Length: 103
Image (cartoon, rainbow, N blue to C red):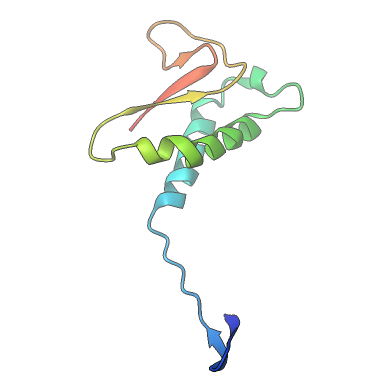
């Protein structure tokens, strides 16, 4: 509830009803998926970093840049840059400093 004063009308109490249309769920689920896929990359838990902190840092970039370019009607890969990530070879979704997520 928010108290708002409007000149000539007085003070009103306004009930704010949030509507979560799925965008924040996308962030949460993406974060969970990344943490799960990187869980075996324990060497990332070094130099005052954790897998979780690296993923959360990327989520901020995802929120402000990448998410707006995704077409949910198409199957797309999303490139996630994680500094320090070691590549695993040609058949892996993990490359040097990045991982590919499929929708």
